[in-house]
Image (cartoon, rainbow, N blue to C red; front, side, top):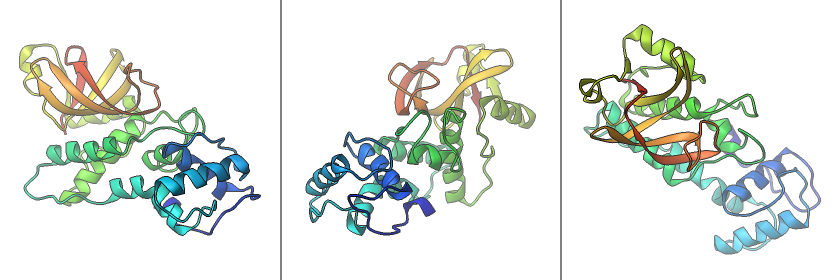
Length: 245
């Protein structure tokens, strides 16, 4: 990913996009700094704190070693997993767990920051809710690992994904216990707002009876469809729809 490439050392007094990107990553790594593109004393203090924590030379500048340490979480999730004998669904869960472990979240504004841009093909901002971007990104990673076409495209709207799945005959609208039995780890779930409108999507990580554990993007601990991070959630199967990838 081009955004992860080191361009040059940035230091106090600079005002540019590289500074803003460094500030985003400082926040994602536990610092509380203004994301404004202005490398002032607060940003320098945050860099020094991060460098000390990461056991790097405390220069107060975002040099290459500091940059590589800042972006290491995203580099981790972009590394391919070994396929072994895993199925597509098993790989979907494995990749989702890897993302979850790095705690992707928004920073610098609503639906904004490096993780959102990763999941949304460099788009960000209030008009770009990213739950579908996260789910289809993980699905593509799993498909690429197996060298097979993804069963669903990289589409960023829940309604669009449901429509495509319905056309392909892989949209399951659960109504009975027999329907619940078709839901497995690695499938995608949809939260239905009305008969022809869906407001949220995520990945089924585990199924137990009529309940499931999920990994989903753009949510939070309350399970809202416009949250700010990737979370593990517990949900019931009832009144959910599923994409049987």
